[in-house]
Length: 283
Length: 235
Image 1: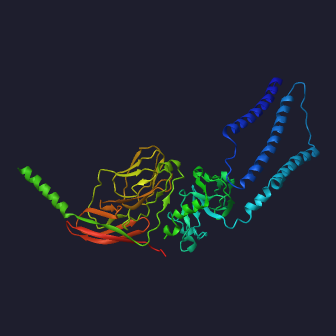
Image 2 (image 1 turned 135 degrees about the horizontal axis):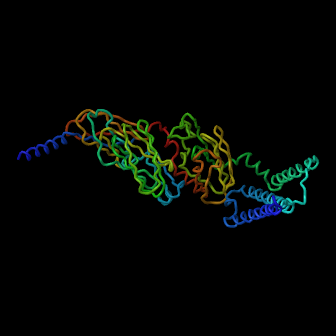
Image 3 (image 1 turned 180 degrees about the horizontal axis):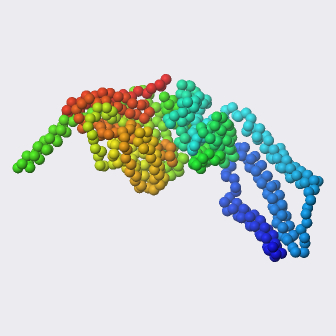
């Protein structure tokens, strides 16, 4: 390769680095901020951590990438210099492992301790609020089943042996807790959530891994067959949102969306009272 | 003159044979507490939702009429039909309109054309899942599309669904004779032109199962029968 070519390639690296940054900025300016509108209480902490890490790693990225392309350009291959062999240097290697390692730990500590990450994790994975609004969401290829516990606040028993096209969740109607459950078969339900009240999602799956993802509420939790996982949050903004599946579950993965409506509690109760209880569906 | 006589005879014969045939009619009653009508929200598909102005639609799987009778009950002659009947040339229409099947329940003869129409400006697919006949699954992406299907074996009932809109569902009773009827919004049904004889008549409801009764009809008779469905298991 001639000296000219080497310089040209070094220049290309700087050029594409700058083009990449400009394109990213342009996309953000044109389409608005990366994250969708925030609508939950705890989401603010998650956004703060996200943005802090983005800024820190963004600065590091720009510095290191700029240094890399600058040096490639400055010290491009030349007929006047001869390449030489760099033997291993244990001290330097330890150093360049420890410095980035420490940086990662510092980042983690900053987000966990100073930005509220650790306490948020503890809160979300600890006890759920007692008077929370309950909704059960069950994934199946390729739609979501929904169940509300009804006025008694308790979900009835389910049994996989009772599952049929008419009873997609296998509700055992002989259980009196099941009678007032409100069931929406796959793809027919709406997640109607009360404003300013904790919502606990009980998450199940009938076949493979799924993952209900509520981008506006910064909630994502896997649905694991044979287990009931859990997520809770407090909706803070009324409106219509969407729940998507965030775990590639098959060909119809893209179709697994569910309308989500956040409304004042009375409105949600009113809507629930209009729905048909399980006792009128399974007998 | 000869022609006239034979023509007259022919007319006489047909009227005679028609007057010989009996009619079975009646109502399908419902006893017990009617379930709360199920509301279907179409919010999952914005276009469907817009067609209904964002309002919920009442499900048709369990329709109790204001007079206490049941709608969408398939009443047909299950046993006792002798002879072969050819299917009529006009097709039965299953229309998809407003992300909904019209009608919910219908009868069709073996070999009779089923015209499946898409009257919506959006994608529907018609997925029939019979057990004895050949299942089919047809996509209809464009408004005004028509597809024709036939069934080869009697089967009560053949379910239809739309995989795009899980709330859409319909049922077809496939028979090798024309003696069937679907109860209307007064719960009435009527089976006409039934040759005299003894028949087992069955009423099929998608949630309440089936009821049968045996009827003997004399030539020219109009027999009134009644089915009474009861809601099982309600505590």
